[in-house]
Every structure is written in C-alpha cells, then in structure tokens.
Image (cartoon, rainbow, N blue to C red; front, side, top):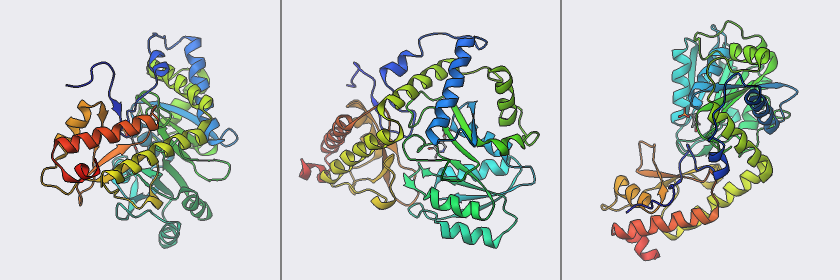
Length: 375
Ligand SMILES: *Cc1c(COP(=O)(O)O)cnc(C)c1O
C-alpha cells in the first residue's frame, strides 16, 4: 500500500518537492493584463538577476515551457544564423543541446568525453585554437544525466580569452552552485522554475548579456522561441508576449522569496550538501557505490551502481521505494546498471535518511544480500 496521506518525496532532477507555501501560491487566478501580476513578473526577473549579481551586465528573459524551450530559445536567438557552436558533451543534456543547435540550422561541432570525465579548460583552449571558425561554446554546468560537475569558471575564462561567446545550461545547478557574472564571463545562463529554486515546473529563463541580446534581432528561426521579441515586448508592455503561465509565475515568486529567506545560494548549497552527505553515508551502509568520483560530483543528483545481484531489477526496486513514499529516478548510462537519487527540492537530511531506510527495506524485501548484511 502506498502512503496516501501525503505526496511522495521526489528524489529526482525535477520536478521537485515544493513547499506548502509554494503550492498555496497557485490557488489564485490572475489575468495576464493585470498590473499586479506583471509586477510579480518584474520582481521575479529582478530576483533572478540578483542571484548571479548580473544587474550591470545582464537582463532576464523568462520563457514559457520546460527548460529545454529556454535552451532552444537562447541558441536560436543569441547565435547568429552563420554562427558555429561547439558543444562540450559528457551526457544526455549535452547531446540534446548539440541536437537542437543543429535543428536550429546553425553549424555545430561537438567535443565528447566519457560520462565520468569532466571537460577541462585545457580541452577548450586546444579546441578553440584548432578551429578559429567557432563563435560560440555550449556548456552543461552540472550534467544531470550523471550529476558530474564541469569546471565552469576555468572554462569560461579560457573562452573569454579567445574572444568567444559562452552559453551555459545551468538548469540543475542554478541557485545551488555559485555563478557570479562579476567574475565569470558568459553571454547567457539558462535555467528553469522547477529545479534548485524549488518552484513548480513550467517556465524557464535566460540571463543574457544585454549587449549581445540587443544585437540579436532577426536571428530567430522560430516565432515563439524568439528571446529578443519576448524581451522587447516585456520591456515595452511589462507583459509576456504570449499567454503567461500565471500560476507558475506566482509560485516561482513565492519559491524565490523562500530562497532569499533561507539565505540564498550559499544556504541552499549547504542544505543540499547535507542532503548529499546523508545519502552517501546511507549508501555506504547499504554497500552501494556511487558511479562518480566524489571530487567531480555535484551535490545535486547522484548516480548509484545497482546492487550486483540477479534478484535486482530497477522497476521492482522503484515500486517498493515509491510505496514507502519516495520517488527515485532511473539511471541514464549505457555501460552500467545504475539508478539516480536527487538531493534537491524542499527537503532536508531527515527526508534523505528516511529515503535510505526505504531503500534498505526494499532491498531486504527483494532478498538482496548487501542490505541484509548492513541491516
Ligand atoms: C532539467 C534539465 C534540462 C531541461 O529539461 P526539461 O525536461 O526541458 O525541463 C536541461 N538541461 C539540464 C542539465 C537539466 O538538468
């Protein structure tokens, strides 16, 4: 029997468990012309720029849709049609970015490392020296398919030294890991409402360098994913260009207020790090090993090797853990049987400990020995 008295805790890369306050903010209807609603949009845009200390250099353009819509809008608007974009890949989201660049008709090159190998600044330096036709570089900050962290500040400074433009998919890191526009040069960082800010899913945003966005009129090959038009319209009218996701904006605003009240990015990172450490201590007790070297692991989502037992299968494990109140995530690796556990969302170490207990009990029920020994 599943726990019907409360929603399961989402240990996934998004959507995430949100707070009751955030959910409550979705109980009212708003008109898209309403000045009070549009004031909230303006406030959200300001709060997002606060997080990267970007008011001097960048502007915030929100976009309807899931995170990928905003990545596509950023590429489609900020990369000129004759641009050439290098995508740094070590997982599924890097591959997705390369695919959408190609579909948007821009020239694309890729540099792919294994899923447990971060891209380095030296790699990027070598690639940009070897091909001067590259105009833009796309980087996935935390590659959510494993949880690996790519060294953003070092890579960004090499790209700036070469005079190229950097577009960062920081979907799963934004708000948790530091991204400071005053010290890290980039032309765009992209994230979404339903990740580390702990809002509901449904809108993304691009924090784009103002001088670059100003030059991007007419680049877009899409009507709806035109970041420039969205920005100009919003600046002129205070409104969204097409129907806004009103309930999501209100709840995202509420989530941003809680983010600030908690103590901002540092406090959020501290909580997630505590969640991560609680999880890892539990996995060690159960005899389960992480896929990544902890040195390159972000405390956001962890890939765990499945127990080496013929009695294991993910679906059974997932269902048993879900019935105890926790939603896990399947692995995304081709070469190894893994599962993933998110450390993000409106949860703390107590929930992580309960999740470990749920996994232990599920493994015992399945007759898998590691956990029996540990129990
Ligand atoms: C979640 C995520 C996205 C966006 O995925 P959507 O399903 O479109 O929300 C993009 N990149 C990364 C690294 C992500 O974690």
